[in-house]
Image 1 (tube, rainbow, N blue to C red):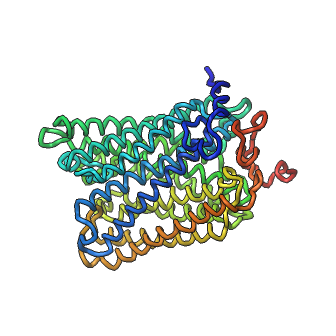
Image 2: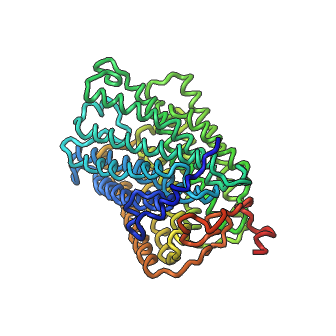
Image 3: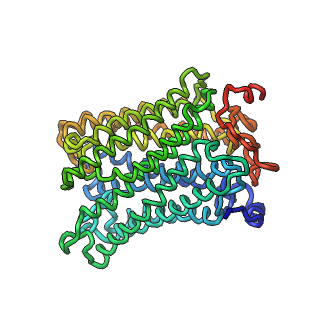
Amino acid sequence: MTISIDPQKTNNKSLQPKGWLRYFSFSLDHKVIGIQYLVCGFLFYLIGGTLASAIRIELASPMSDFMPRDVYNQVLTLHGTIMIFLWIVPVVNGAFGNYLIPFYVGARDMAFPRLNAVAFWLIPPSGLMLVASYFVEGAAQAGWTAYPPLSITTPQSGQIIWILSVLLLGGSSIFGGINFIATIIKLRRPGLKLMQLPMYCWAMLGTSLLVVLSTPVLAGTLILLSFDIVANTGFFNPVLGGNVVVYQHLFWFYSHPAVYIMVLPAFGLVSEILPVHARKPLFGYTTMVFSIMGIVVLGLVVWAHHMFTSGTPPWMRLFFTIATAFIAVPTGIKFFNWVATLWGGKISINSAMLFSCGFIINFVFGGITGVALAQVPFDIHVHDTYFVVAHFHYIVYGGTVFIIFSSIYHWFPKVTGKLFNEKLGISHFIITFIGFNLCFAPQHWLGLNGMPRRVAEYDPQFQFVNQISSLGALLMAISTIPFLINVFLSLRNGKDAGDNPWNALTPEWLTSSPPPVENWEGEAPLVEEPYGYGKEIFEQK
């Protein structure tokens, strides 16, 4: 059985709106959908970042004096939900996956173009619904984890809207995951082998498997939770005999793989960027592939390390400690592969490379604290403190978001045919890197000394360190300004990039910039060595 692109579907793309109007249409063009994901996600990033700034303003003083406590809980809930489900997951998967995967496999489009469009158009209404819930009396305030009994006893209207929004966003992820698996497995051009695919394809294949296997568990869990809230059932309500620990098991069975759903695509993207700007082949291609698949398998069996303080028996603690420690092995392999790719290369110091190197530094630090949290005695000591907040943000912001910005700088010429202003890009990196580390590095100390997370008031002894952290958050907010200026100036007056400004070898650069509707004029190129830098084939070019 093979999946083929229906000519009528591709012809329909030429009948759709032209110019900027196509980005507001139900487009079937994977490139347009990728840009829709990116722009929509970035708008929600600005909203989530504004909420983060409000949190840090509140925490600049020990007392709850900037917003009431219940409003603080609502803001905290919205911030976490928006950043995960409306910014990182849609962008790192949907935006770059949609734009790049068909190029990498030599296809004209995704396997199911209409399902692809549906997956995107579930996101804007879901996001608007989530944001609007803040203005409903009794907005969700149980955190992005929605733990019962808190999520059951807080006002119902906002929590139900929150659940419905997350369910729709989960459906979008599942549709996208199915599409990516089918496209990578079934739409490869003749002659292209699996072990010749760019690394981002493998990262998206592993990510999509995690999405399809784990997201339905979250969906079922939230449906049962909604029954408890609306129909007064007793699945998780302890007053009616429900078990809150079962909720935690089901929730974290999705939500720990969700970390890899955010991080694995970033691993693939950085593996595409480093060889280009270091002018060296990607080191250890085969080990990178197997380490991705190792993370996929292990990622499904480590969820209970979030529950060491939930009355887990000793045998369970031991198993999940060992499994969590093991997952550091394939992750460490990737780190050494990236460093080996850079070693001895002709490195270009540009915005894309700086953000990628910043990612490596931040992610290694986040990985080290992750291994520490896998150890039961240490985890019990810092559980639900700011040490966990710091660790999580070093992974998902210092890791994934840094790569999102790196990828924007790298593929902006492909999408627009224009070059970014590198001075503004480097300024963006410097302010972001300093602000990020100033914000989150001190939070490790706060957590080690016992400051709890998710609370608006704290012991006055922590005020000075919190003020340093809030200063870092201010710098992170300011760093968005040169980025936005750069985007607008480059779109309007940027230098022409040409078709392949980086002299890259991966297939998306072997067509015009921006690409035509059908990706190539004629047959898709067969790229057997996407990282063949420094070899005769490259020198001859």
